[in-house]
Length: 164
Image (cartoon, rainbow, N blue to C red):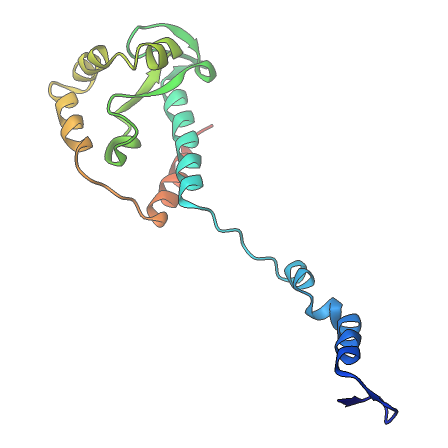
């Protein structure tokens, strides 16, 4: 029971109802969110996806001259926005997923329809980076690697600074 200015006692439910009306602007959860909005926590999956997008853009821009890029496997020329980031070793292996040697510019035909042209990709890697590069990437890709959220954020910031 509560007394309101020494008048008749007010029932508990009426008192609570009055509290809600009087103090709703202060104690209501939605009002508190407006005053102090919570920072949205980004999930690991969304962070990896964002890093994939930024890294892909970096790889495609890195391989372009005057916005024109050449496919690493077939030699086709096209605008870098129409090309893709091809991986010699699959993106499933986190140890080579964001490796700048493992990833090269590829046209849609080679990357998607011809499954990445693995043999030509390996031959061209060895020609460009030295004999045994493809083998080193293979062995690197079978090592288990797990990046922390901090590592992923650092990689994201690093590649965001490198893209145009």
